[in-house]
Amino acid sequence: MSRTRDLIKFTWLIALATLVTVTVLSVVDLPSTRVQAQQAAASLQPSDPPVTPPQPVVDLGNAFAEVAAVVKPAIVYIVAEQRAQEEQTQDTPETPFDQFFRFDPREQQRRPERGTGTGFIISPDGYILTNNHVVEGFDRFDVTLENGRQHKATVVGGDALTDVAVIKINETEMSR
Image: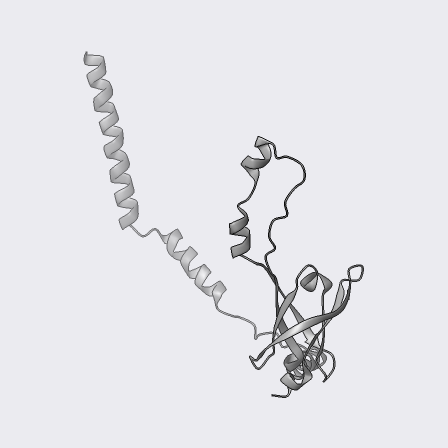
């Protein structure tokens, strides 16, 4: 019994000593901590002037900005949509496994599939170049021009191998 009592006293003594040590260290500002803080503050202050890029780099950056400003009106945003199709009936009888994992056709009819992409106008009569994966498998396209106007588009053609497609909006709509 006295051995247990001694162990409890020793544990309390260690806990009290730890608490006193932590309290003293949090109140006392040691010189090494102050020196480290001053060194950290000195390293944050710039000692050298900022590096300025050479003039050819600045000129190239300005050229890119000018090109972007010129071509920005030609960039379009495309929303592609596939109207939901009704589920086809199967000639083969369904197994219980098929019935368990089959999707509800009414849910499929409610939500058409959608995709988005970008393209750019390549001619004043409304031809737009985009990626084939943007239009492949979709049957309705809404094109938003840089000025915010929206237009319906039709697919002119596409090539899956090169991932290039051309769509067209009505050129009279573009001029409005």
